[in-house]
Image 1 (cartoon, helix red, strand yellow):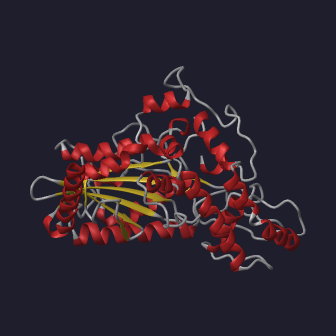
Image 2 (cartoon, rainbow, N blue to C red):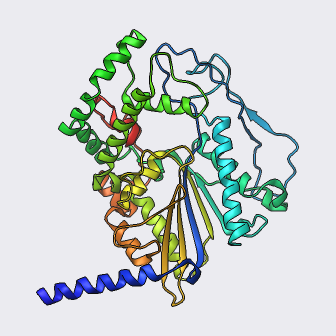
Image 3 (cartoon, rainbow, N blue to C red):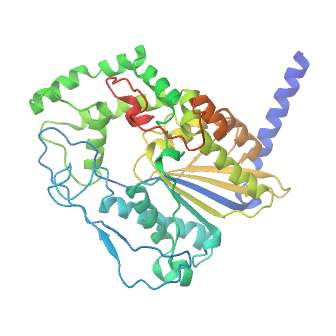
Length: 417
């Protein structure tokens, strides 16, 4: 038995040496899957005593589609506008609406992608080719607009013509969405709920009791939003050029940031949460690679426009989230699939411009090792439904009100699950 143990060790060691010897020049890029968080947006909750008026320059323009020919003229466009003084936030913005800064963030990122994958690597065609692309977004205005602005940077108008003027962005209705944790899964909500009342969680929350008292004094109120709401409000303001309120310091904001970052790491460290939260999408991610490896037709470029929790869950599922911080606006997670000289396949992971290495993997991770790392949280949709207790039919839908959620101090399930 001891001999077998030593043999296994040397086999693993030898494979690592081989992987470390693989270099970019030996490989051919075959497929890219990109997952992003939307750009800067307005907050979901306002701060007490706030006098900020939000002004959104962006608006959604569209026209009704008659068929799928996508070659029709566009005689008239219709623009969606929010009525000033009739929204939750003061101004003409909705809660969580992409701002102009958020638009610019994805536009600039799209330009960088063009420089790298088109101008430098010649991986994608110079002019837009719909056959190379698959774009999917959550059914949210901020993720859809982020996708549009990024694609505009990647392929500006002069690089599109004919049918390529129209780019399909596919969505799934929220009740069936798997790019986000779905509260129609009672099992997931209950697990998150239990974590939110655990001893560690409560102790972490209570550690900021002195800060809460300071904020209550600054704002002269006892109705302070949850920590995650405060973090969201401060972060959204900072990325839209709005200074901190009087009396609030950078150190206070950092304390809140540290707490919510700890919370999301602690929560998503649960394999059950990650599996039920993103597991069916992880199956799609791996299957897309396997399709290319099998030599079947697959888009060269797949783009998923999503959210911070999407990115965090995927990183957690691969055991590489710790230490990366809260996924920022325009967070981008790139999975490059390479073919080696001996028909071997490798996955290269880039997160916000930095290469991430999976455990027991070099910079270019063998596909089998990548799949092995993802396996613990991968789950087929039928199994997901069983574990969630959804057995009455494919189209069964649970709304937020169908699942009983305990109102914990952080209302964790509302934000993270």
